[in-house]
Amino acid sequence: MDIIMHIDVNSAFLAWTAAHEKQLGIDRDIREVASVIGGNEENRHGIVLAKSILAKKYKIQTGESLHSARKKCPNLLVVPPNYQVYVQASQALYDFLNTFSPDVEVFSIDECFIRFTNITEEESIPLAYRIKDQIKDTFGYTVNIGISENKLLAKMAGDFEKPDKVHTCFPEEIKYKLWKLPVEELYMVGRKTAPKLYDLGIYTIGDLANTDINILSSLLKSHGRLIYAYANGIDDSTFKPSAPVKSIGNSSTIKFDVEDRETAHAVILSLVEMTAWRLRKANMVCRVVRISIKDSLFSHVSHQRKLLYSTDSTTEIYKNICILFDEVWDKKPIRQLGVSVSDLCCSDIQQMNFFNNTNNSKLDKVIDSLREKYGDTAIMRGVFANSDLHPILGGYPDDEYPGMTSIL
Image 1 (cartoon, rainbow, N blue to C red):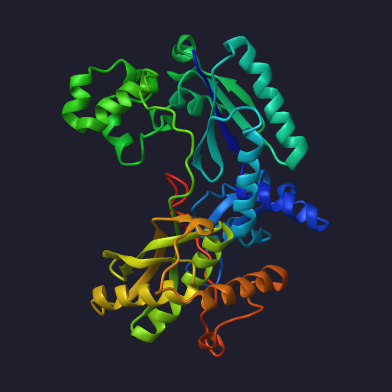
Image 2 (image 1 turned 30 degrees about the vertical axis):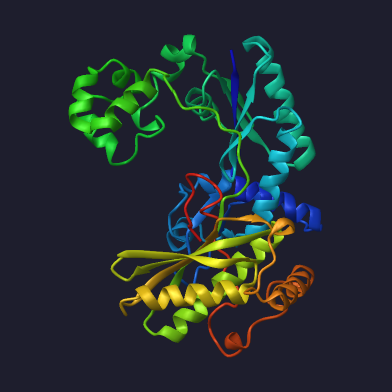
């Protein structure tokens, strides 16, 4: 029998930021005060992404506006997110977990599953404690670990009590550990589904597990059958050790409505700057580029194209995404723009071609090194010199991590 563990970093963005500040010698620990990780309070990016234990006491919620959070706690410490720190910390964690087992499946930037094929239930518990404690000693932050024989039950176990805990939920424990929980705590029972279940008199996971499946199927179709199975601890999904990154994306909600082509192109350039930087940092090149547009009425359109060559050049990616934008934009005011690249391969093995401008790529790598040493804005494009736009917009990586969306 396989043993599956679910590893979840406690308040990941906050924990990773605190650990990074300690490495830099900053004399504070944001986990010990009322603090949140959040965007810019002066524009639409003002959302709480993670909160400290003291911030929770003020009933501050993840996802609420910083304006609302500060009303609850006037002295709230707001720390801006740092995408590069999160990705580096996440990768370091997964590399560490690979020393225990080669089977690590990434679920999100701060969650993963790890599979063991040669241990018993009894052996899994001390092993989980050893992994948890070594992560704390090595990296300076805590995780929760859930243990079971499938991914669903392992994830549910990991959420029983936080932080810095190990829990089990094996099939024989479902009735007294899982069924007593409110039904909305079951994975895949969201805000829209829960009220429909309440109308049927279903308030706990146990209620759901013992409901006639035909009633659930009639009301919720395939989703009803899925959550019925989950309530009974049944998860038929396969374990898929994480493959290399398939795409790299970046998006941003803009603090004003974009109504002209020139401004839209500038925003695209700022998004491509970060996307192409990440692409080169991963030692990859792309063959497909994509644009996505959301207007002020939240209508969404996207468009992609395959290039004649593989590239990691900021200029080449930007040029082609601008062409896509001009083809699909209907002139409606734009609220959000997103770019992504895919069909990736290692830059060391790409074929030579006559289309790609290698001089641009070499220049990009020099710029990358300067920005890494002196900061993101050490070198910027001239179009941003007298502009209110930030020269590099760094969004949350919504393509690399399943189940995650761009929220910055």
